Image 1: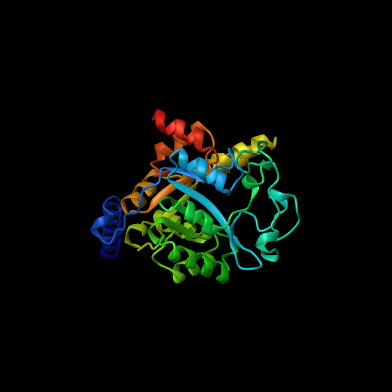
Image 2: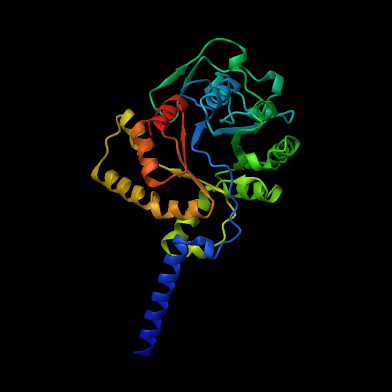
Length: 316
């Protein structure tokens, strides 16, 4: 009987401690670093309204009051850091080349018609102006937007790419205005080791561990080195499946319901926000999804349509 009593007492104490710290993390974590809060985030600069990841898109988004530009980077054959999402140039330029095998001055112009990944069946049709269709250097982006927070997805997570990006961050004194990382755990850790003063988003494996710690009650006791959490809103994939005429079975719908309820927990988002870890949801392209993000308590919303998000936020 005494062992059962001890067990129940221990479980009760642990549960109460976990809940108290979940809503009062400052008791245990006193070294909370607050970074500039970013509510309006433009995905690839606003891929639905301009050529993705281009200076034209970035200027448009910042003019609308975007707090953060979300971009992607690769390294060319001559070690220039360029802003582009895909390692291959085929989708955006129509030329079947890899960025890593191409010199910067040989990069082709972007096609005038671009697909919008998170708005399936929709395309951006842009002007034929040469300057608007150039793949930009990260250095040019840093120079053009010295006061804008920039989130860099370090594609492939290579040592050389991370080294060159860090050199540019230091050169333009952007440690407090840059967030970087990789969805691959190895690349994410390389970023942290290279420069721990730069904000870093969770890798995919980091996110899995985060949810494990949350549901086991361990999260309030665990130190967190990441500064930003990109939260997936599962509804965006429902929209993609619907656009592709994919027939959802009862099993699919139950799985979706389970995933949505596991991932989108207001208590988790609130805890991270209290610990100074910004939470932003991606990639949301309609008002209903904007509302869901606000209701869940996310600190930021990432979109392909910065004008649409601006109108929504202004209405709020």
